[in-house]
Length: 429
Image 1: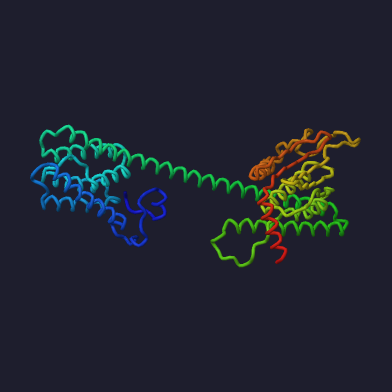
Image 2: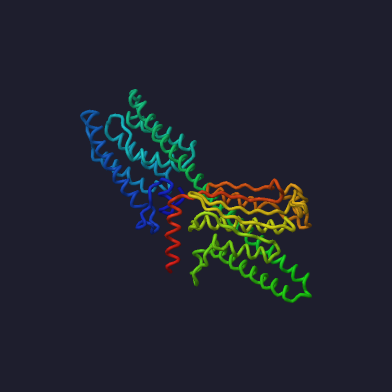
């Protein structure tokens, strides 16, 4: 089959595993040698039985030698399966011609034909089965007209062996294809996860930096305002770099030794920072927590953080003059996070005209910027994050105006307990 594979790969494909002790360039493996010895033993016992049943001549020394030699080609069954079958078939046919024997199908012949079926195409396997059947029938009948038992047994045996080999080969191909599909799917999922992280990091921090830079430019005559804007700008840039570095560290994990402990991922403890940044950026924002506060699993905490981050970023970009509210509610078996803004309220408190690309309905519409930037990945990323936890996300305009993002995330009892233990360990440190 064109050389040997790695031991793990062969074991995974259902082939005979390669012993690491034999992975030294030898043309066969220890498993091949044991298989040849086993087939030789079975064929020798069969030769004694079948020649004894055939008549008075019995077994011969020449027959013993030929049967023994017929197992030697099995050592090359992996690299040269067709040549192996030819050698086994020739030696066993010669052994059958040396002494009369009742119809049989040798173990070495079974292994050789099976190896051809595993390694070659269906057409080649069919041709090998036909040749094997014909030569076996002719040799066991001593080139005379065979009895019906001999004429039927050899073709049936060859058909069963070849069919089993082809079935196993097909199953191996399907397993390999499924494994490749799963690997490709895992890569695609990881790419989507990285894209979500990049979008959340870039969209939030770059939007904040843009607003702060614009505010500083518009208030050059007020140094204290400019100073606060520049401080926030510097802080946002530093956080963006830190989160990007964390993401890059994940991508190159294992390539380089860690020189410093990784920074913790953001979670619900960092919501206050998001609210403060939103206020400094010009969007009045309130944060309220309801229910008994408790540690959340890290992935759930990160999801809550990213949803609030994306919701506030969208509010700053699209809601115009507005107020925002972040509400975190702890339930017995779930946590709910809401990001609300009243950007659609008119001067009289009723529904008014939306500002920005969301339009009057509050539904995001494509950004008319010349750059043709993509819109909608933030909402798609939020839905994907929530779906990974088996939760539900609702995002859309509020009846009284504005926009609402509501995420409901279920919490498994064991995950909550593990989070509490981890939180206690971290606090103790």
